[in-house]
Image (cartoon, each protein chain N blue to C red):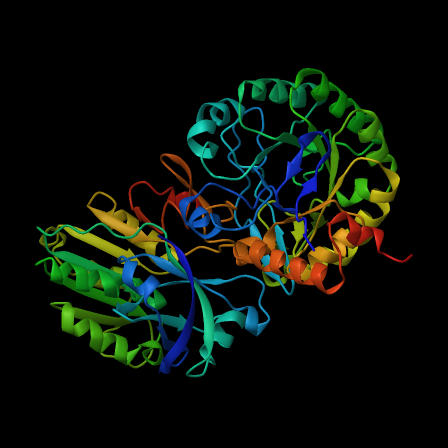
Length: 305
Length: 255
């Protein structure tokens, strides 16, 4: 039997592996690239790029709990112009397809960034970070209503030459209308979930243990929540769903594929163990052999409801 | 090149009231580690999510050792490692110290910060240079005797000072520094708690001083930006642009 480990990601084409690296946990820092270069990675998603440079949030930016990580980095980055200038040097020869994550405080800002990225040759697509819980707009998290998500996807779609992925927060993913609106507005795929808004206090200092007061939670603790959302959303839309949230093993990844994800993305746990893509791929291969499964999409077709 | 290596514990000795010196079998990482660089040690077998960062205390061709002070769940678990247990280690990581052969150096360490100065002192001596050292601890029981003995073989003059309690030399490293002629040294290297480093800034920032910073890290690999500090060149990652910085470039008001 010939096994096929590639996945079709809508208008983005075919990835040679269903394993992606999530935004915020991939960078071209040399130590990380030394560890990742041989891994079976289908695509990597850059740290989120904003219109202007951002210095990020105050320390402490990370907090580790049992099976979870809370982070509040604050989208530290040098802004889209610098990103475009450095793109070929930084990403030109990394050996993986690249998806650029972008975020704006308004529909116009998203569109401006998307347009500036048109000069790049490399990327496979853009991922719209519609949900970063650390960034506010008029007191409300940007994208708290479905209509706004549609406006962003439409505006970016009309000025970008790249396929768009709409990345949803848990609060956008719990209500299928956000994904449906994104699909109607032209998104090529949906990815979910972003981190879960979370808080942790340092009781003896009477203050938050996170510099920016609260942050986003990731890691194995969020996996069952993410899995349920991926299951529901993948049944609500016809475009591919990229599932993520606490994936730490091959079994976790297979659960997401079985629940309906076309591809999976690993984040927090890949920073802890950059050999995770290879381990996951090995488990997927064993699983397919064991159950006589020829292609990845068959995993979800075999799911008995 | 940074590698991931499964390293067996060769020995694990308690060397102070809350500190262990753990030696791991390692060929790849030990081989390429430079003074001031660090490693990320997996604590997943102990139920911890993230790795723990440690400077490499010492190394030879086939081993590296870490000074592990028990300050939380991860470090307490590591302190209980038995001989033969295998742990995944990623390294070497970060930018280490720069060595100036020509001048006499003073190494200033506080608490477990002394660990990052050992390979440096060996490198200085190997390069034909000379160094003295001042180490500060909170109390006598925290002094890691084995480590002090190791240093006494490479450092010309070693002063140990203790914050409080029963010890002949009392006070902190700043008190000791105030007693010496600072012009004697061409280079200063400091590693210890942030509060200690901050106290040294008025005395040493106008001199050729390098500091190795401690920081809470998530990835340790330069990708998550969890450990960013402010410097005169903007935000810098402690794990990637550091942990060694010049004292002058760090924005101490922000730490």
